Image (cartoon, rainbow, N blue to C red):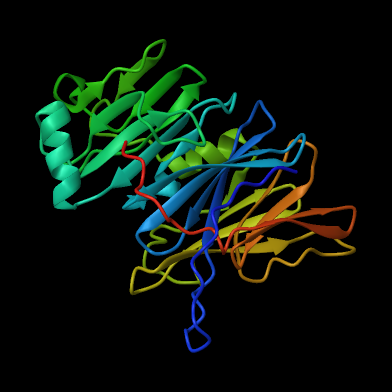
Length: 281
């Protein structure tokens, strides 16, 4: 196993331990690849590429700002990442003006994971645009209506389909459905309804509940529905089944593999901290 985390600076004994990193993953539907988003500190996210055939985890870009993992998608072949980002800093806006001649604090980008360097870029600073999904490994539907104005970098070799008629593609639902999840319960309005009315999906023996409380805090909760030995899903921030049927779990900033009734830790990503300038989009 190859893991390349950067180590954090040493803190004194009186320091309050930091909260565990929050991890979310995107599976490729046609390849043994997973992209992991690791968030912490709050305004920092790092991207990793996990080869689930060899269980090799490769560290990638740090991003300073907010990467919206539920508005991001991984191509079926696992070669490209479509992500949604936001950075309102003066430095970022000055850089966008210098490079593209536009004011930009939110955007959709296409990259080759585990890097975030944009090979396709769309300005999403209008308050409505942002996100999208792969229709196939070389066709992207983006939640942008005016590519003439919003497309800043056209990705070579890709077909880009704009949103038509004001209908947005629901990225997280699209991505989960492609990798084998199906909806079992959809409330009329799950946002703000709390645990009593989750948006629920299932993939074989794994159940996923998206929950949003009245304070608009959003989180997930997982359940294992099969008989026999059960994996530890308490506090899991992400879980999914890979193409070989293994359960992949992230909890408390660590990544685990549960298979054959046994759990193995792949990596502890809590010590990985940004010690150098983030790579811009």
